[in-house]
Image (cartoon, rainbow over all chains, first blue to last red; front, side):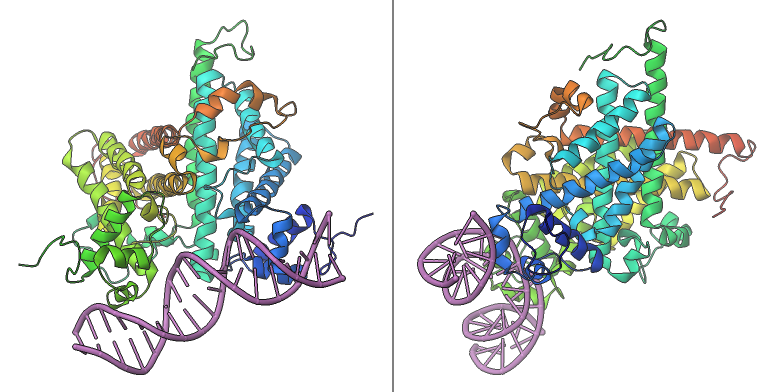
Length: 241
Length: 241
DNA sequence: ACCTGAACACCGTTCAAGT
DNA sequence: ACCTGAACACCGTTCAAGT
């Protein structure tokens, strides 16, 4: 029916434009995405995009929503315990951020609010729910988990955007350069200097995920202790807030 | 000696310029900081800043470093357990991000690398060290804690920048707008809709801090179990990596 | 209905000229 | 030594004009 992925002179379309955004983002990870560059890639004038998106924020929103949807789909495709699936979802988020850095850099900023975003929220809530969390505890766990994943994924992406080659290898920017500084006033920084310089972004992400999910599991265990043991699966049994 | 804080025609200076940046950032939280606006505030041409900073990134770096230093100083000023002091430091980071959003929005991006930044690293390591963490565990805890604090503080700031008034009140952008969407495919999102919409940024931050510090305390307890009980305070006793 | 292209306001940055 | 001001390349966005 419709021509898909015809490189130039393709009939413009929200979906076709988002395809081009993601292609640009992964092809040239260090470059900003610009209407001009987008137009060149699509064989179209830079201002043609305004027929399909109100402004650049709406375009970014659509691209982010697509990426959010991809992360969920990948996470759902594999089996495992609720924690394994949630972990997979969160790690996939970070990996996709590194794949599309110029898009993902805005992740902490913009609420995509589309179907991909909703599927992501639903999946996080689902896995936590399966883990036994309900009510206030579920909301708190969702906050900690998704707030962490979004902010940290965006940070990873911004690393790549700002740092170029080095950052893509994993070096983290906020610790990459106490090169010649005098560290006598900061003894622990000096003592652990080499280890701190060796930290890479994905390891930080993984450490955070572990720390948060460990706590979430404990919250779930607390919930199990205080719940009615005869009816452990009651939906919304302790919806408090 | 030197005139301090004379609003216009003050002798330019790295420190005077950073003062002006922070003043601008807190006076008009929604506005980007621009050389033009900076020049107007200082009674000086926009391009005069290039005499004192190589480019805008260096200026941002200097401003961030000042803010990092402020957070540590505030945290050190109050007594308490290591966890309380670390928590105070992290919360102060978030609060200062909300105070200077247009500066703090870059926090996940740029490594200040100055004395304020080093003091911040030293303070985080110090409190964790006092909590009994050493070696690989200390580095892992530092990663989780500071990665979280920086990324999440930047996200809070970007919220304010992007969202304007509403965001400053605490509404979180990535959950603020599944307004008219059909939620039948996302039952848990629908069930917790009101609670999710009520989440605010600082609460997310606090939930994340709790989750991470709970896990860090457990790591410390594990360390205590495996350590030589006769020599619990040995510095770097189990430096592995 | 959809796209073009000139135009505008606003960025960061450079550089020759002033004092 | 320090600051000015014109200039440049590059943004997002608007709008009248094309087809």
